[in-house]
Every structure is written in C-alpha cells, then in structure tokens.
Length: 289
Image (cartoon, rainbow, N blue to C red; front, side, top):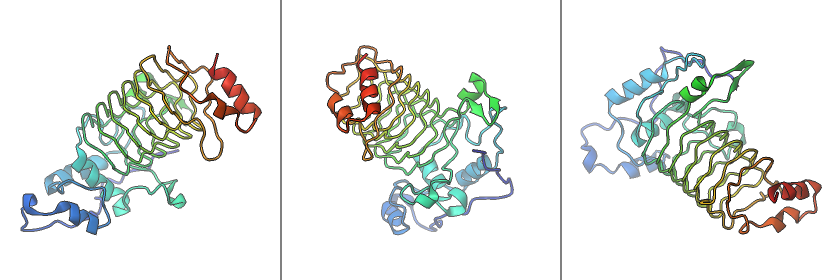
C-alpha cells in the first residue's frame, strides 16, 4: 500500500479547543475529554508550541529509501500521542476497527518514533504505521532501511490498547506490557517481544512470522488463525490456557515454529481436531514434532 503524501502547507485541525484562563492543574481534563467523545484521553492538552512542533513533523515527506519519517528518533509521550490521535486526518480521529468502512484508513505514522517506557494504556492505535516490510512495491529493502522504520516501544505499557491491523514489522517491544491488548490481524513479522507480558492478549489472525517471544508471558492469549511460521519461543514462556482457535475455527500456522524447550504439555492439542479437518490434523502433527 502506498503511503499518503503529506502537504507541508496543511496544519491538522485540532479536535479540541484551547481552554483559556484555566490552570491545567485545577481543570478536570478527564471529564472534558469524555464530553468531547474522547474517553481514551487522560492527559493535559499539550501547549501550542508543542502542537506546532508536531504539526511541522507531520509535514515531513516520507522517504522509505532514505529512511525519513515524520517522527523518526523523536521522543514522544502519551500527551503527544493523544493529540496526534485527536487531530488525525484533519480531525477524523483514530481508526475505528468496529466500523468496517474504516479498515482501509491508515492509522498514525509513528515509524521510527521513540516511545520507550511510556504509558499508552487503552489508546486506540488501530492500523498504526510503526514498521515496514522488507519489500516496498518491487523494491527489496536493506536491513538498515527496515530498522530505520522500526518503532521503539520497549518497556511501554500497552495494556488494553487497540492495535488491530497495526504494522509493527520489526518493532522493539522488549519487556512491554500488552495485557488484554487487541492485536488482531496486525503485522508483527520479526517483532521483538522478548519478556513481554501478554496476558489475555488477542493475536487472532495476526502475522507473527519470525517474531521473538522468548521469555514472554502468554497466559490465556488467543492465537487462532495466526501465522506463526518461524516464530521463536523459549523454556521461560508461559503458555497455559492459550486459545488455538478463533470463532471461525481458524487455527495457527505452525510450520517451522521454534519452540526452544517451551513446555507444550499445557496446550490444548485436542482442540485442533475438534472439527476433524485435515488441515487441523496436519497442524497438530507439525506442532508436536
């Protein structure tokens, strides 16, 4: 999919109004955001100077070959991301995954951004652009070009985040918390998820090819329909009560999955044979090799 062209003369239209003559510390911002239909916002509105800075960054034209992205190597915090979401696409706001007509919209472009150690809990980051695949059109990218687009979310708090359809190729998520995050149909090829907390995280139909889960806590995670070709696990992984089937009886693809001494006895192999489908039987055979 081609990236949208950014118009350097266009400034995003704020979805909120600046509150005058009010001390932020005394103002009930949470109630204010709820009144505006933005219940995911919890922070004070960023000041006009910061808004101008972010608007200028948004005007930067993406150049995949040169590794140029609006927020590459820029340190962002939750307040920044909230403002970017509220003003996204001239005030349309975040992508609503439940609205099928919006699933072709692109989310925020945070490729290369630095969000390490940030509290992003509960944010609607659907269709987030936070990495790039090794091919761009007919061009094969170098490792350096791929790394330039990779977001840094190391040790970030992403609990209950909406990350459906997000592009997180080669994302850095080590030691992050994604408990109950919604990551369906996201692209996590080669993502770094070592030592993450993925309690009840929903990865259904996500692409986890060659992703690294060594040491991850996957208790009650949902993996139905996920592509787990070449995915890496380890003995330290917690896999108890992992769900292997989605509501449409789709099962994970497990060819060349690297289990690395992970304890597989806790997995419900029998569920793979519930429908008697030949593909499920083949999946089971691959899983247990």
